Amino acid sequence: MSAAEPLTVTRRLAARVAGLDADALLPEERLLVARAVLDTVSVGIAARDEPAARLATRRARAQGGGPCTLWTLSGTARARQEEAAWANGVMAHVLDFDDVTSSMRGHPSVAMLPAILALAEAEGLTVGDVTVAYVAGFEVIAALSVAMAAPHYALGWHSTATIGAIGAAAACARLLRLDETQVAHALGLAVTQAAGTRASFGTMAKSVQAGNANLTGLRAARLAEIGFDAAPDALGGALGFARLGGGKSLALPEECNARALIRHGLEVKKYPLCYATHRALDAVLHLRAEHGVTLDEVEAVHVHASPGALAPLIHHRPTTGLDAKFSMEYAIAAALADGALRLASFDDAAVRRPLIQAFLPRVTADEDVGDLLPRWAEVTLRLKDGRTLSMCRHALRGGAEDPLSEGELLAKAADCFAHGGGEATGAAALLAAFKDPRRAARSALREVLCGAVLEEAI
Image (cartoon, rainbow, N blue to C red; front, side):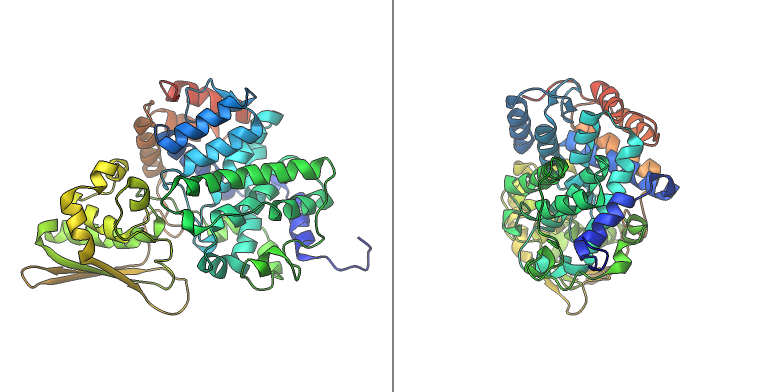
């Protein structure tokens, strides 16, 4: 590129990624990444017995051994880096319990961390390297999300799979220390592969799309590393990803600044289902506890939500655990019946309970009009005795504005470890390991997982 030629949007983002100074990261950024690793790996471990997780594991192992750890096994199983990135991405998204970022309308950590960690293991890199790579990838996700996530998602795209894949490419390129030109090519090469739709929600294909985001990002960085090139402005040009994906111009220099991770934040889920249900769940569980309401006392429930909030909730009469994760009707019915939403709430048998299935038509939901943010949900219970109970929920415990305490996060992760058949103490060990930037990423994963999961999934 000549000195007189203006920087494209892709090149500007590439410059940010290549030039990100690890020494300039704030303690808050380092801690957020450590927490993201804990949350992402632990929900993968919790999913180890899910059919999609077993299939992903089997496929990865069938491709031959390698240097990278498969998270949901005993810590002794290895796979090649691309296979590990893909399989771990699938497994960590199966339960839909992994973190989200509202501006993305998706899940940033599951789209990047499996690839980052597999590559770090393969290359013998440190926790500090993992941290700066994650921050670089998140900044690209933030820029793309501001420009296009809302219309992109509304058109039916799965932004975890699409925007996430480009973030993963940026993260892997930074981990490999590619120069600015190579990073720009990696971003463009990710565009050539990024895909995924919301039609897959409620099926194994949704978690496959998360695995594909990691595979795409890792492969794009490796291709750029050996000399493959891409369009000069694959992200922001007239035929670029942002415009073709339903967005506006990507000329957003303020989103190329540092601290996107702090500004946008990570939202850790309290409940193992689509985040679009969580505000309504908080409200209905509060009303249930405060007023002692049981399912058989409720005539009907209506949820009125912020604009766009219901878009992911495409299953209205679910019959399996997977499609129930994208059903407001099931979320409300199960919350009223059980007083909680747990991992066991999404067993197929739990979803098919006659009292739950009979109540589903009594739950209705609609959206307001206007801006996507801020998010909120108002729940109204109409009781059989004539009373009406209502509550509107804005901030969420676990959201970026009210994050879980370290103890609460560890409790969630310990429950995930235990659900996967392992030792709950592995959660604290994993968080401690990823707070030490000098620690080898490979040992941080293997030492914890070898003691965390008791028997291998087949």
